Image (cartoon, rainbow, N blue to C red; front, side, top):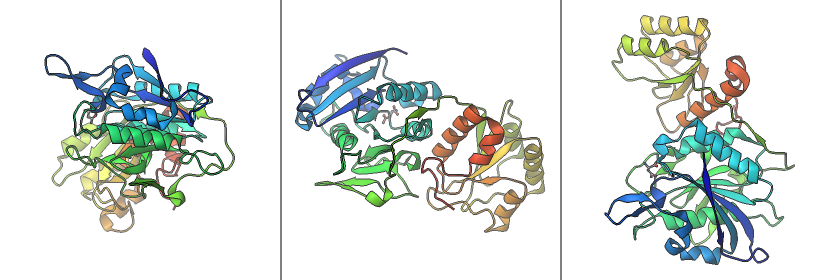
Length: 356
Ligand code: ASP
């Protein structure tokens, strides 16, 4: 993949409060109308024209822009690796990172990065917009300015205020691997039902210190980039045909399956379904239970309709989002193999699930 590197000097290096690297991948954020009146990705080197307020932040800003900015529906493991590699390569010389990304799959990428960047001690803040920056009512300006403030914020001791992968949108800073896109038209596009906001931006940015991951002794950053995509999601619905379940269970190369269950982790308990799932588990498939409810958690023993899943060896995903489960499975299987992944999937690795 090729990149364009743009330097935006909003302050001379000795005046700058912090050094922040913006990684621009695409999405609605950077769209502008061309001469035909069609929305196309804008030239990021013109950012100061769209956002002159950037100057007053007094930051030393560098932008690495994907040569071809893309809609986030086209982003996947290859791009996650690229973003991870850019952060890794610039980690020592930057105070923080802002990733500009389409909103549609932003929570997946933020979740993936949280598992890829082990030992992270600096902020990686994802943001984007629901309306292009070229629109007068766009949310792009506030989202970017505040994301940059967060990425450069330091504690009294001079440490990064939010040393984790997070997502800033519409006044709320969320942990990346707890976030999900819940709204396609309004500005409040993201939610984190099972974990409190890391900060709220109003007149001031109020950091929720108790919720932010602390780094006592800084560790060397390690980058994990091997993904295995041999996974599937079986989303249950009342009346789901056996053939549909069978088709998913018989997918070639399937190593792990997420079942999206009802309520606190419940599923239809027909003999056919029990037997089909049990057989696949005995053959080596490992199955993770994630609830279709955005809030609350899977408790497999609570109802009869969930108990049988536990009895046949389905692993509870507790309060993990589907986005976190998908990316965690891909990276665990890719890096450590299916057996080890099975052991680790139910354990918190990067704040993506609550401790038991
Ligand atoms: N389709 C766009 C994307 O995800 C939507 C957005 O950026 O808000 O790239």
